[in-house]
Length: 607
Ligand SMILES: Nc1ncnc2c1ncn2[C@@H]1O[C@H](COP(=O)(O)OP(=O)(O)OP(=O)(O)O)[C@@H](O)[C@H]1O
Image (cartoon, rainbow, N blue to C red; front, top):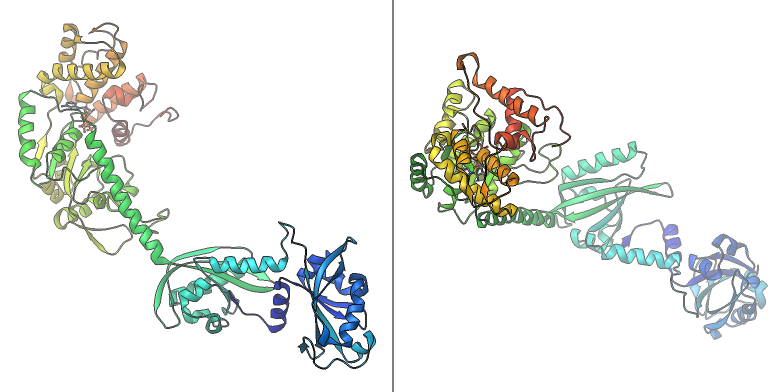
């Protein structure tokens, strides 16, 4: 550790740092002139008290020896003698004496002894003695002298991996550790006293100036600043990137700032590693999902057979796929099947539900953001496009994507390029897009709420998933499939479904499609006692008959239907007793619908 101080301060500092107890004695006046911290600790008295004590009280047995020394300094050897502690106890110490003239020269021993005899004669020639005491008894454990503490602190600062630099309020370097010497490639002799500005980039200097102003405003009270992405220069002018913390402190009314400089390349490497791990994590999660046997796609009806044929045709091309269909018809299941049957099956499939992300978040979710791009962007984040690189991105409910993001999405589809939020560099990805919606996108495009060019780009290969009511033949198949699944899961011995149940299921309109059917069957399995699934209150009631469809818009009908469901569930939206389950919708989808239709949630406490 290198340090810059004025000479008298430096003397005091070194004096106190010395691991031996030092006393400056005036034998003629029989008094102790000065003592260091170690001497104070050894004698058990503060320095000020020691200074006023007669030395005959502190070193009674030493007086004859002192006189002998003054008579013939050449004879002096290190002596063992007793020293009195504040408590009255006698300590065993070794004493080494040197002669000090008033001019400050020391001699050990002096070749020319002072003239005269005795204490008075010594004083007359203006000589003082330096007595170095070393206690010969081991230091009791745990007791650390201030000098030792200073030495330790110096060693600790030197062992820090980060560069530590202390500057005064003129920005001159007054202390630096070994790491700082290595970082700046200069020793204490070059750097101490140097204006630190010479080693900082313009931006760093500005930051330092602003920080000092800030410290001034806070009256130099403890305050901490942190900045990243700065540049400092080695003494040979070579730049290096740093992150830094700045902390002010005051000693004897002098103001200082400690700068801890960390090589920013360490952080940058850690960030790259984090990005890689995020990517790996997403990839492994996707693999895990793919390994969980996903529900087979059940369907023997003619529309489903046509769908399967289309799906196989498009899967191993890289064409974008648009899956259309009412809610709960199995669009996500189809999207997974397209990915599984494609060349990208060993890569990740990343899913984003555009309806569940707030308008403010969706851009950074899709495209990522740079650190500090907006309030709360504390770290760089990869977007779903980057995570899906080389794999598939499934954009569910794409009809809900805000218009401004539709333009950005179009650019990725056309050029495979985008920028992170708050970023300037263009990123390239290789992503296959599968999108799904239950809205009529063609109509939305005609009405201007969806970009026409994007619609055409997505609509290259549309797959329409038929609603359950158009494939009545699949209802029994699906009912058997879900009964077997849920019986197994719930440990029920159900093997068949009664004809009444089959009839009721076939007669129902299934507005919530397959999801609704699955939930109904699950309820039936829970309530059923025997080995055959029997009819009961759990079956859906007869369909609502729309007597005069022209008096109500579809939205009004939907609003009323959702409100009915909410009334039945006491306003509860999600969970097993929630309206979403009753309607065969995902809670997030129901939430989005309610927002769109202006239906307010009564309470949120249970969700
Ligand atoms: N043909 C099918 N065979 C077996 N299970 C199916 C089938 N179709 C749908 N399901 C099941 O129905 C539920 C709803 O399916 P999915 O989430 O794929 O529908 P969706 O059309 O994407 O719904 P939403 O429009 O609400 O996003 C899932 O549990 C799914 O496994």
